[in-house]
Length: 116
Image (tube, rainbow, N blue to C red):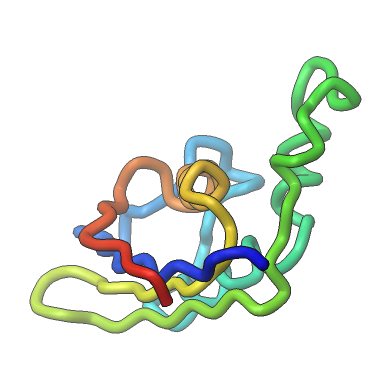
């Protein structure tokens, strides 16, 4: 049984939080859109498959990078001048990091992580 983790994340400037590849990037307008995009990225292979198709040798991409957690949940809210997001998933940080970077680039920060 995989260990579920609770990731506490923040995004300093959600209005400018975009990934490096426009076709893979988050394009929403607020915290609810961000939470929905992140939750979908953890629950389905859609983002991974689109990213993999862009690689020089898609068939050589490690299939374990496409792992999903159908039970993943994400919520986000505005707090002071930033957006705080809670993500609960059994996916390891390496996969969470890759998908967040694809969606919103390096504009996010891990504030804490605990066993869910």
